[in-house]
Length: 157
Image (tube, rainbow, N blue to C red; front, side, top):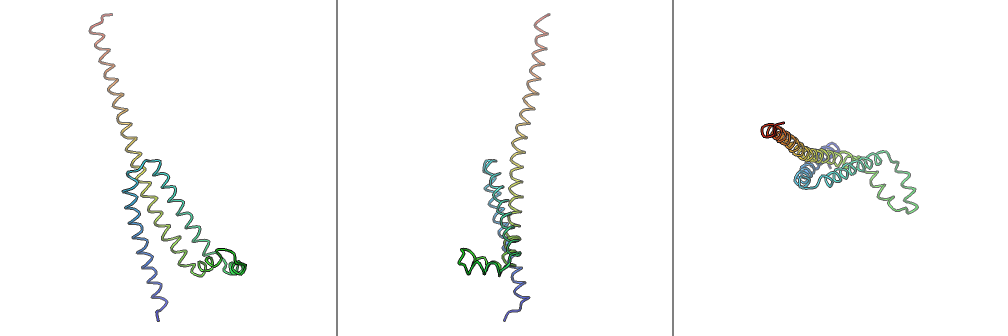
């Protein structure tokens, strides 16, 4: 028979590995996928990732706070989803850990990576626009000063 401490250590290692590999996978996908997308689409994906993180945090907190007796009453009335709710409440620590910690951490890493990609894209676009705008202003002012000096040479006033 397995000791209770061994199962907790096993769960910690599984949760760590799941979080680590999901974060790696999702970061790779977003880094390579978001960098080729339009900024508007990238912002929409960012909002979706943040929304998923919020929803899973809500589920994790709700499962830890819920009272099982209320759902037994609903199960006796054959209300849809009550048996699933009882299973979730009985495994509240695992569900809360997966929803709030694992998925929440992955969504946090993803939202940070996507935000960095969006910021880099905006900076690149604004820098080039600003650079060329400054270059155009400088060149037009140089041309204006040349025209004025040429006018002075050839047009005696």
